Image 1 (cartoon, rainbow, N blue to C red):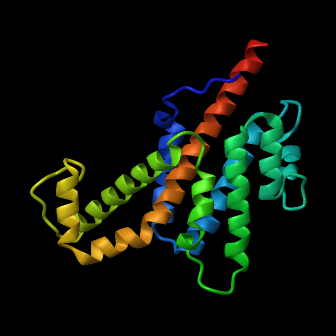
Image 2: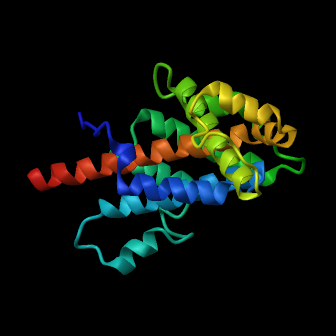
Length: 219
């Protein structure tokens, strides 16, 4: 069994991905966040699959595999391809397939798309083990509070503490005094949960690929 370093979220890849997801997701609607998440997963899976391609294949050949008309041209094909290569374990494989189905709903829905309407599916997507969804929700709240804190400071709000997580009470009090911030918290929690969950899974997938490459070198 391939073991993943418990510090995989501290890697350079994980840090870059977190910044990318944070920068992009905050600008999106719920529909846009779902579509963007699926596109990021598709692009990242393309990168991971490419890392395990045989060296005798040319770049042109590999690029052709990922063309829209190629056999790895769709998100669905990349999910299955990554699973066949051993890049995706059962949990990430299930999560990305749920994401793909939600992406299709978001893309083809004529009505307003809200992530909160699909909370159960998102919970299932990120239920990767005992307590994993609860931990994800906690991390998502912290990420959102950090974002709100930074935004409030950028428009001239002042605080008598530097760290928004100094104590939970200070965070709650600061936000309760600012109704617009509280409203944003409620409206964006699902979006942050989606971003943080995708980040954790993709960082783990990248670490899995690293280990598979290492095992090949040892063989």
